[in-house]
Image (cartoon, rainbow, N blue to C red; front, side, top):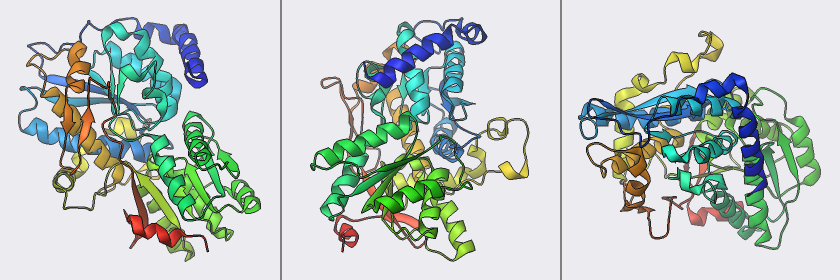
Length: 438
């Protein structure tokens, strides 16, 4: 067992023996999780950060999923049942994610769905293993961490997206090919950041290289704090490129302070950053300062561009987001715990890579449900997913789950984007030449 997972399991055992939480999970869900003939809903359970540092990721993922599910439900649902999401706020905190998961299990949700974040997912996976007789599975978490892809927890999760190892390898390979071999890392000091850091190290080792240096930040760090200390590290290192493993507030603040101190190394971020939310912060800063914060920025993605309307699913996604708008926002009780204040208002993005991923997550899950009988059982869900085989949701590429190879990650595709015209657009393979070290 890997050290991070072993520590997570130990922490979970301690957590469950805490009297404050033990009672919460004391009522076991009925075996199988069958909705039943008299029930009109299939409920999915989601724990994510709706009110703290990663809120834009969770809100947009939820909105994208609801854009698809609302369409399905208006058309009669699946086998006559509406598919709904019961969501709870974990503020990107592992202990709250455990509490939410216990609550969702007690409420007998059909499946766990679109959890957001590595630190929270890693702490909840041991809980699924401990209660595996109840057949709870996690579908399509918004993380590329290995924890849900390798034993012993791979059998409790299905992933739609490519892994962080695949994202970081692609970025490293492209930078090295462009002669940028001194690669530093800026990362969140937790399981998420260390997972990405390990991916960068592994990719560099494949080229006979090592990480040139690193700087970290604390999870939950806001955009408006100073990152000058981390920038000072980069000034001393003089890297050819920097790969960021973080969330949009911290990465935007770091890039802002980098450019303010004239550190011009190219900066790359991975999909979890929430590139559209990061760009919104940096664009606002550009307007106020008149400085360029985005021209040497590249971001890897795990879904194609939501602007590519040659893809049928992109057209469908955009139409759904246009149609439902504010109607697919999470409830105010999630967004504004303790009451709404002007400072906490969230302005939804019309479209984003994150909400597009949420849309695809919901589309894939509904496709799995449609393969099941009229009275689906939770105990049959894994087999239904593994029997999907190849599946194209309109992307022009095949997604694939398969029982023969026990394949539980549908896509290996990584895309690359840069900022042009105030938005992230696809970076073609030949355009990497612009990043050549001169």
